[in-house]
Length: 121
Image (tube, rainbow, N blue to C red; front, side, top):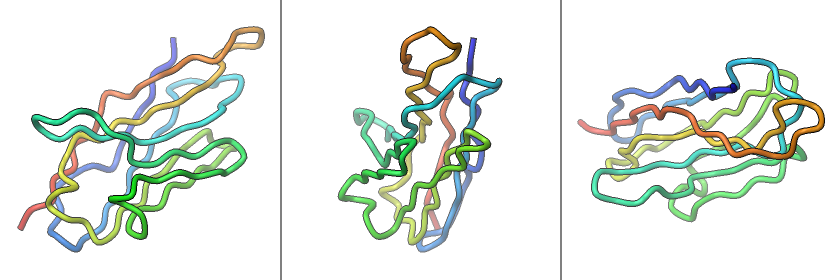
């Protein structure tokens, strides 16, 4: 079974930056797309940003111009650079991947355990 391993969360002051990383825990056949979602207390999980294997990106309006999603296809790793962070960015950030684990299998949807991002002075 494949797990997504996230890192990079933490506490930062408003206006600060953080970089999240996520990668599968073992080698996989191929990745179609990866992305980041977040869930704040009392709110539903929402999309933050996604990137396909062809580097097509999509962002939530609330993070456009502040967050940048990128990937290293050789390492099957996705990154989320978060700049100009605001208190309203405080949430648990979840990594997501649509991938094929083994040759001959179809696409499956995987989620990480989540990493806490807190923006506070």
